Image 1 (cartoon, rainbow, N blue to C red):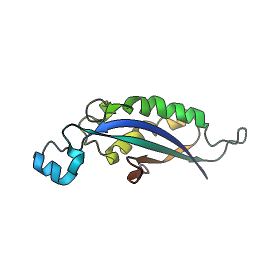
Image 2 (cartoon, one colour; image 1 turned 30 degrees about the vertical axis):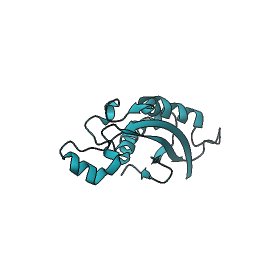
Image 3 (cartoon, helix red, strand yellow; image 1 turned 135 degrees about the vertical axis):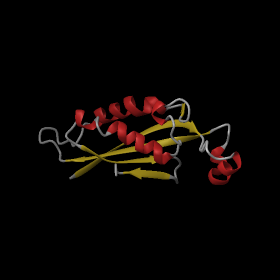
Image 4 (cartoon, rainbow, N blue to C red; image 1 turned 120 degrees about the vertical axis):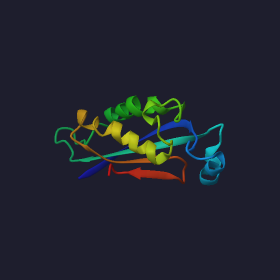
Length: 138
């Protein structure tokens, strides 16, 4: 099994805020991430697929096609957006990195077979250089 990854980048704003809690509780739990005026991140998304190389191309997946798929179905929908307001698939969800990466999985997983025999293996979403989540679809 060979694992192939593609890195994509986007910028987005959000705030962490549970509408069922008081402002004091939100600030206690989320700290500055509960700022009423939002805050932003320079996100890095790493999409990893797995499979066996095609005997004719040597590719597990055509990375140009994978990049196009990610950009058209994820990046264009979140780049320079407010995740709490502007992104329909995040409506009604807390805009945490954990919830965001699971939504990305739900979008990409059924699309990968359209361009390759590869399977989606994992998504890593970096919110900052030191904070990231990894999701394996489990």
